[in-house]
Image 1 (cartoon, rainbow, N blue to C red):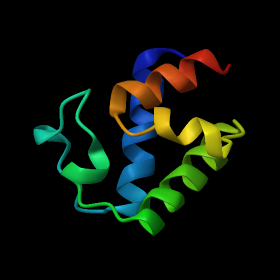
Image 2: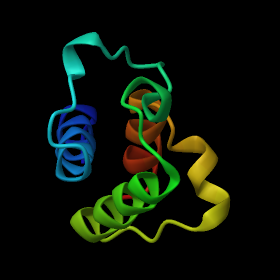
Image 3: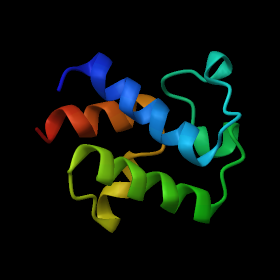
Image 4: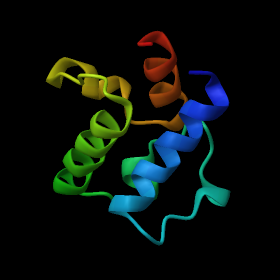
Length: 80
C-alpha cells in the first residue's frame, strides 16, 4: 500500500464515523480527534473500521500513533 492509498483509506474510515468530517481544514499533523470533535467511542469505531478495511491488527499500544492523518498513513504503510 502506498501513501496515497493509505490516506484515502484513513479518510474514508473517518468519514464512516464522522460523515460530515471536513478534511479541507485538517492538516496532516493536526490531531483529528480534536479537530473533528471525535469522542472516545467515535475514535474506537474509527480504529475498528480502519482495522477491518486494511486487515491490519491494531493493538491498544498502537493507538497513540493513530491520532493524525500522517501518523495513520505512516502506520499503515509500515504494516503491509
